[in-house]
Image: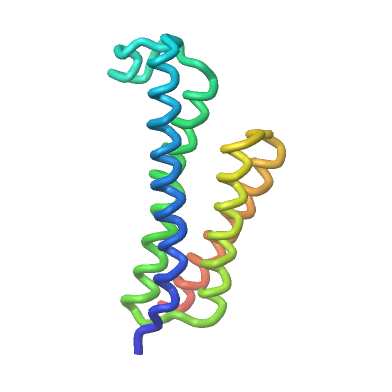
Amino acid sequence: MKDIRIIYPILPIVALHLYAHIHLIVNAYRAIKSREVKYRYFRVYEGDAPDYLKAARDHYKNFTEQPILFYLLCVLLFVTESVITLDIYLAWGYVLFKTIHSFIRFTSNYVPHRAKVFYVCYFILTAGWIRFIISLL
């Protein structure tokens, strides 16, 4: 029987992704309105732009990278019906630390704290993938 609980952690990550997108749009509008950036900057994202816009863009780009592996892992666990309780805990752990990571990026953006939390996300995700691969053997 398929364990739907592995799908639930995907939902807050998607919501966080959408929030990061809105954050990027708001910061882009702010930069354009204040004339800190010209429209042509958005053609290839090169040239001068304020740090707050670059930070918002980098955060949004992050959601097209590592979380993709999280989505894929959750879906594969669900489809192969190989979900165990550990997978649920790892998935929610990833959500927790990804949320903390995003909070840091949205506020202080203090790199040492952000890096630590990023690596916790990375190791949780890696552990989930190792657990999944072992389940296939």
